[in-house]
Image (cartoon, rainbow, N blue to C red):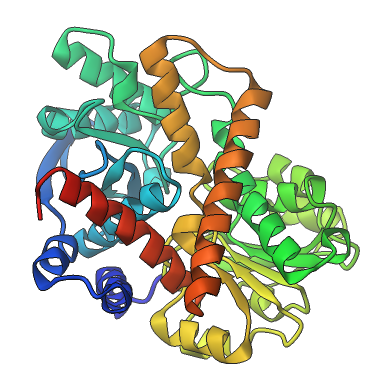
Amino acid sequence: MTSKSFNPFEVAQQQFDQAADQLKLDDHVRAILRWPMREFRFQIPVRMDDGSIKIFFGYRVQHNDARGPAKGGIRFHPNETLDTVRALAMWMTWKCAVADIPLGGGKGGVVVDSATLSVGEKERLCRGFIDGIWKNLGPRIDVPAPDVGTTPQMMGWMMDEYSKLTGQYVPGVITGKPVGSGGSLGRTEATGFGVIFTIREAMRHLKLEAARCTAAVQGFGNVGQYAAIGFSELLGGRVLAVSCYDRHDKTAYTFGRPDGVDGRFLQSITDQYGTIDKAKAQAAGYVIEGGDAWLSKDVDVLIPAALEGQLTAETADRISPQVKMVAEGANGPTTPEADAVLKQRGIFLIPDFLCNAGGVTVSYFESVQNDANYYWEHEAVLRRLDQKMGAAFQGVLKMALAHDVYMRDAAYMVAIDHVVKAMELRGWV
């Protein structure tokens, strides 16, 4: 879990400031981009199954919409804070820009552990979230999506509530919906497979043979699952270990096998919150270690795909000398202090808002399909995703090589430049 002393928004601002220095941005442009344009905090009263009324608090932050409607997920997490949502909204602005999709950055959250709610309570909370913010959402204003603790079904409830309030069917107000209810094929695996597409591009740059490479994955939610599956099925490599947080005993564990884990099998014994069934894993021959064991594995690639703030100066020092690449499947998993360690050790980094942009890219594809009322085949979605992710990676790599800068700095430089140009064309600066 994220340390309470870790402030993700301060990290996001620190990363932005460093890139702004390199781009020599004017002070007034910096002032606009360092803070969100709009922030909302609101109460969500929900009738619980026992008849009582419980008050939850929701957030929605719209960081910047110069390039298009704000875009970003809704997280249901017990440790959600306004600063977390601010940081994620800012990162979404850069993510959409670096992927060159016409959207801005937004993010939402509710302070709740969704695993403690019944299905009915979840639905009422989802509808209550929309009731509290619907006037500030819309396909041309702000488009939410699922994130930590939320699911496609929950997005379907939110879309339905918005449609009821507006008196018309509006599938484009939410992405990540179930297929058959305005959702896109390929969305489920989009973020994890996008991570793999960028890893493939990085391997080509580093002249690594993918089939001979190994990886360890932190987190086994949607992103971690498909990153593990994709590393084996798309690249031909082996994942030696995956970690997950067990919601039952509130402890993290690492699951591994010397000959490589079977991502599909582990997915089949994982609940909707990313908790792997330990008994079934042990019966299948998996070795179960402590939650941090993934970090020190002798692998070529580390894929942090859990929460922010996981790689710190202390934990980065435990990374095996064999590691050649860190691919950030999660948002903000690496602190600036850990970045310094990675730089010093020459570990190639694929920064979060490039590495995990596959989800928002297919969310954009979903919006396009909603507008056209015409839906693409699965292969077409993944082919377009591959093209987008490959082009985005090459754009960042070109910037890094041209200016001799760290990949994270290069990604910020590409993204911020795109946003500033849009602001200039619109006459904002």
